[in-house]
Length: 184
Image (cartoon, rainbow, N blue to C red; front, side, top):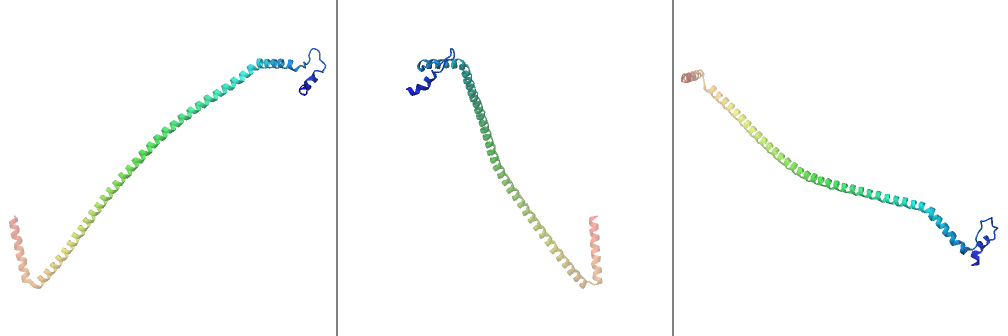
């Protein structure tokens, strides 16, 4: 134990400077010095330490409050986002269903309009065929009539002479005269 206390013992051999001096008795002076130092530290440091701890406590509480407010705001934003997502999903489903309905409706309209167009084209085709048949029949009638007329004229020219021709004209004039008298 002598080795540990040697440096402190050598302090005791210094000359004293008036009323101030070192007490070399470690066992007697150390607890007193420590209690004085601790008392001074507690007395003067209590306010500073208390202020530091209060400031730290207030900062921690403010940080917790801010975190809670941010958490509340984040939860509110999350709920708003979820509500918007649900709304958008409903609208998307509605658009999807309306889109399918509109597609089906357009499909039916297209089928109906195509059917009507085909029916009209069929009617136009039938009308055109009927018209062409009537035109062909009329052409054949005209040709038959012309050929019959030419044949009759040819027969008349070959069979008629002037006397027969005059008698036919007189008979026809007489018939027209009788018809005129009947109608008057």
